Image 1 (tube, rainbow, N blue to C red):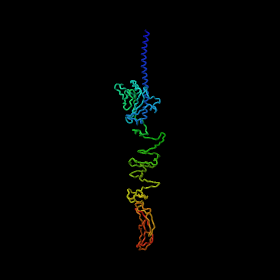
Image 2 (tube, helix red, strand yellow):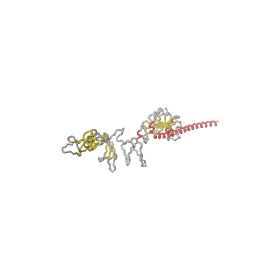
Image 3 (cartoon, rainbow, N blue to C red):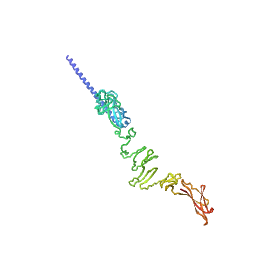
Image 4 (cartoon, helix red, strand yellow):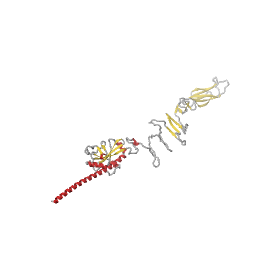
Length: 429
């Protein structure tokens, strides 16, 4: 009987030991799950954080305050932020994903969550995983997990470090993990000048400092394909050249879409003249007027070819500034100058056209070509060799006839007399 009792006692003791072993075995498995899941979450968090910083501008174009951009493990692996063999699900069959909101312009808020799979029903284990993930770790609680303290519509950080309402994010449900990654400033974390438009972020297409195009070897580089360049000052140093393409234009002060301001001008600085405001200047000093000025007040213009004046002057009409020159408005090419406030030929009011030798009955034609606009055809007749007696009267002149004048040389009785004279035709102004 005693051996039987002893055997029963040994069996009971043995069973008690097995129960303890099973308990410790379960705790060991749970701890392994906690460590593995937290480690996997940390890896996903780091990859997501770097991805968001590197792609902040692109994300900012789509993310809003209420509609997030979702980032998957597959995306991160494809982009090289996660190892190719990274498992996108944790030990509970939950899938990792990140959601990015833009609560304010230029600020991105990223929340990593585990979705689907089996909810983590052991609330102690749920909190342990969050704790091992670090300050960013958290979870979505159950309704009764902490009395009435927690809401199932909010993700909570380890030891209450943070809380995020899931209003703008997709709520994975209770028993799922979460990580709140730090806010990302789009501009501060993306110190690049973007060559494409960035929606709602014009500052990313603006330089924040001087731009140099000389490389470390001292080589200067080009800028090509500019449509419009707007600048306060354009400085071409050394032996630089300004070469507008054929058919292009240089517009100063304004352009065909913007009203001009100020008094636009171009300054030239002649070598050897020392420091000057200018040596020669071309200036648009008043409406429809361009002036060439020199530092010494005696600007000169030399042209190797020809100059063509506009057909703007009307002979005999008034003009505003003595000394200005223009071509006759009739297009004849006659050059007029402003003389004492009147447009007149440069040669004066009477311009001789031709000179003829005439006698009684000679015909003198009108000036050919005809007088330019404003001129009147006239003739001057004067004797050259005429023989008469001392008492004779000589009449010498011209009578208008068709196409010209008829010359007469007569005595007092109107009788033609011998001799000759000269007749000059003029254009009178």
